[in-house]
View (cartoon, rainbow, N blue to C red):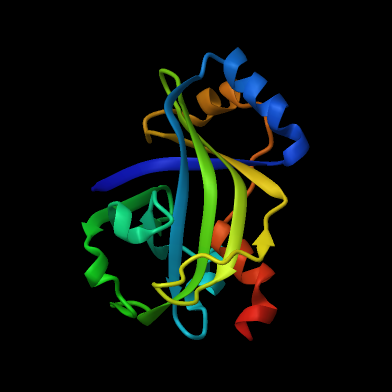
Length: 203
């Protein structure tokens, strides 16, 4: 899968969840899938070059991860994904890989060898209307990567939740502002995980 899109994020505290859901209903967003629990493992260099590029807002940059919708990766499909941030939009490349091919390291042409660094899980709810696709992420948890046999032993919870708004390049900015008169912000689960777990990761 190769998907170009625009993406913006609205960050909110847990106590604002009911307000956000009401906002979506009032703007004719409908829930399009059942909630899903998502489990991801993010890769980086030993010097955390991908993390540092993201924190500095450099473009182009990328995040590299494997993802499953089952806590036990053996029980469901596993996706290898690259999420690439360009100057004006974003692209996601995704492919299915078998459990016995889970990589202990990945070679990237720009960054060199990447290694699994952190595990992240969260609950995602999906909404849509005629112009926009919404994902609402909550119950976000972080953990240092241990091994593929002990994937998720979470010891750090995120206090914030994220509303991600995805739409095509053809929608002008004023249309976006008309629908979302809320403050947008940069938010990266991976960067927050690294920042929150630095003591555990010894960085």
